[in-house]
Image (cartoon, rainbow, N blue to C red):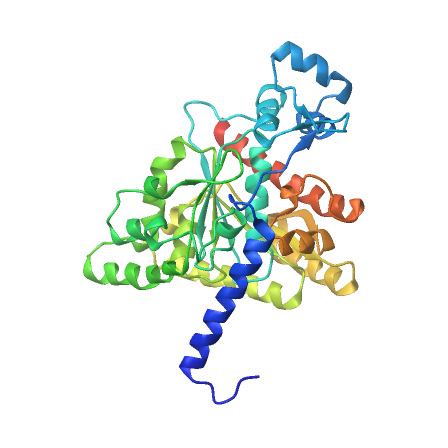
Length: 380
């Protein structure tokens, strides 16, 4: 524990911590580019496309699909992520966006950190690409954790000009300039850095200077042109009800709140919704907004009496907004996180197969839920 701490001591600590993190990153994610997409076997292809594995060879020839490659000394074929997505698009039965329809925006939000908000956001994005969709992640959290999971270092690779801030300042007409390709095929990101904190001063300052300035709709306007390019735009918000979080929720067509069934997390979630509801009372036209869906997802679920009790409270509080999907507290999640990865980054289980499946299956269900909501919106 530090005592009599001077600002210079904090400067030294911050600098040393940054050096250590840089060394850890380089050790874990070499070679450049920092992250590599996973590969898939024939069984995974068959499961994603909902076909019998024995038909893979026939379908390869019939539809002229990627044949995969055999590793030296192995009889099994491996398919790249791009090849896998090609299979899904040609053979899979997932909904496709009609040409005359626009993509939908989903914000993932919670008042608290540590609820698996960012890992859930990126996992949904990855799973959605494996269902044939083109996805953009918009990182609105100054910590840049979603950016990090997309293989981009917020400290080393992201200048403030690469974030949403030039648009917030009014130097760009929309957010097209900030889109970056990631290591994951069909998944793009608008990265974040600590420079996003400036938005909390810029937006209210503009509201004071410009009469009628709708500070809560700035992000909505910047995203609008991007809807024609992307099937799904996922916004990862900061663990607060900041100006950017409010903008994200107003810009979104759907809201997802990951929330552990823990008494303090539940109480925090109630406070979050209450403040947001009160805030929208004071924003012109905000109360007229209609969401495609709002859903509360149980995350970090533990198999104990307290968890079961709090789930009962949450079910009573949120009713049909609780979709019943339970993402467990998992060693598989912690193992992936320690490598700056999600469960979808792993080509095969890293540890217990049971733990891997137990964690991944509800995430697959959540991705299917989101894709189903997109399909419903596109039909209307």
